[in-house]
Length: 458
Image (tube, rainbow, N blue to C red; front, side, top):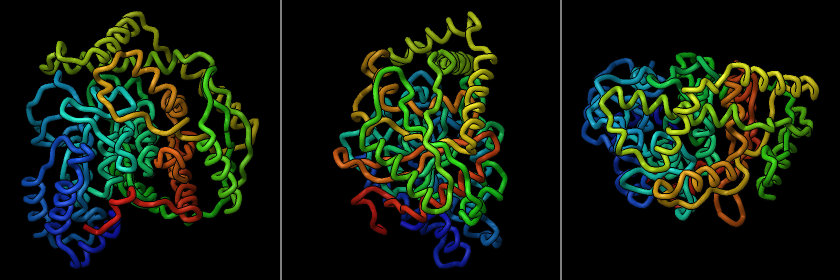
């Protein structure tokens, strides 16, 4: 499958039509998704009509995503389609308008071929929707992660070259790591957020999932309406970057799988070899998880209140979600989420960076391979919490801080057969630096663009 950049160039040059790119994508979805479950809606008729309309334009060469088929996660509005957020509790009426980031992608020439699966309310790190369990294209016994699991599975199986995701506690980076993709969570204000609720107290951001850094940078640039980000994704800036490699485990109990730990060490060596300055130093993770957990549950409660206000039937929420939201309502009622919590964490991490003289932080993206693909929605809230926290403990701190962060593929786990990845983070406004480092790491240590068995042109 061609990259998004290659497809757009072919459409602009007349080597392929938008109708062909969409037809090819729909054929791949029909062929591949039955065993994956990435999509909850396939927009075959509408996408073909939009492709035919796009083909009549005379300015295709000016559109950065001309004719590129994309997938949108089921928690931002696509005009004419329901937005269910993985739940039977949400209204099933079609959305009247596109979310602004969808409108920007379409204005750039992209064509939405489908809506991707999420866990209910995007709360957890494995994806099963009311109708299906979404599976990892690298190992179908395992999850592609969550909450952007459907988007990651769609890209990793070569159904579409790029997909939209969002990230409140790792929901782009976890699926990216599980599925061997590049994914970046930008900092606040770069990409328009979802409407409603409180954005998990500002932790949630929209971003891209892609098979290459350049494709992700281009998609992010379009969503952000800042094309300089696409240039950063080329990795041409060779300025050395000071990176603090933090290999310590974030929690008081537990440890990082030895293969994931080795991948982090090897990535540090590669980055050193291409001219960056890598220093190993333990990151002072907070001993009190309250600032993260309170925002997680409180943000979910605000989302549910918004759903109820717009005609949703909250009685149809899954049992685990009801428990999560009930705790969140108590948090919000008592005013337990405070700005001072975030301020203290930012100060601590800033002191760390100053003490080691670093610009970026690098950790593993995950502590171990993906958890099982299963109907986690039928298990208890406690079981879901334990599974999520134990395998994906690295990402959440940086959502609280509001710092941009990305997952970069690095190797394959010898037991699970699923990808591994490193997690790089920078201060607010460092998206271009992060993209540049990721592009250089990709060049020095390339990864398979899609999962084995899905790397044909069909």
